[in-house]
Length: 289
Image (cartoon, rainbow, N blue to C red):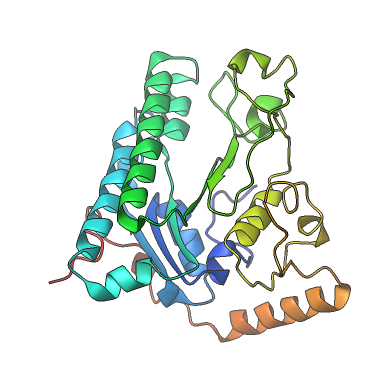
């Protein structure tokens, strides 16, 4: 808190570490954090715009559209590269799109201004185009989608404290491995005006990682996800069937996982310079001849 933003001040595990391969697009601050924290650096690929493009005093919808463009370039390149196509289609592949626009625009113009509402519509467009592009590319209905945010924003355009507007975030999951929503109503005065069908369920942010692990059927040994993940409200109620493998819940298994992660941390070689963890700005993903 007193030393400002740091990249990985402590080691952490993530769903990315348990995936087959990760293709990630977005902010250099966020992607670099996951890249440098990966147990296998070669399995997490990142494409970021230049850090100078992040202007928290201006509209940033162009950054979200850049992310969408890079995803489409990646999929297009795969049509001419059998190796890239095979890697993308491997079970356990993760595509991570980090959309910074609403955060930056909210700081600049506050979350109730026309600029912020425009950015929300851009996010809607990016999500729609992403679903369409992946559905067309894979064509097998075997993709799971998880849409969420790391924080909210107050009417003043800031976040970081315990104000409900800062801690409430959306979580929408659909696709392969995700159970159907429930039809009965379940909205209070906060969300009844949204006009959404089905039942709203409130969960803890830490549960999102457990949902991703279960829905992707990834075998994982996770050091800093405690036993709450295995008994969370997401694990059983939001999936059509109970997965065969669940997160470790005993003290012995958690201790073994921590020791394994510590061993990997000590033996892992770090990039010689921070720039190695971030691809150059506007580079076409996997431009292959």
